[in-house]
Image (cartoon, rainbow, N blue to C red; front, side, top):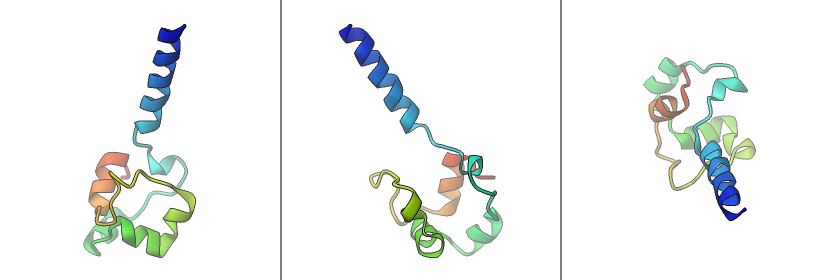
Length: 77
């Protein structure tokens, strides 16, 4: 039983750690415009209030994270 519980916990954690595709819930963004304007995660929070609806892991998602880095990890095309 302990092995099953450990396996289940591991699978749940792994599933939660996978980067989600933002376009599953949201319209695609204009990546070119956001890249040219040097948008960062802090910009997303300031302009779009992303922090109100999402709680990203602060160790990975620093305010300086660029939109290109977000796009690469989350498949925002």
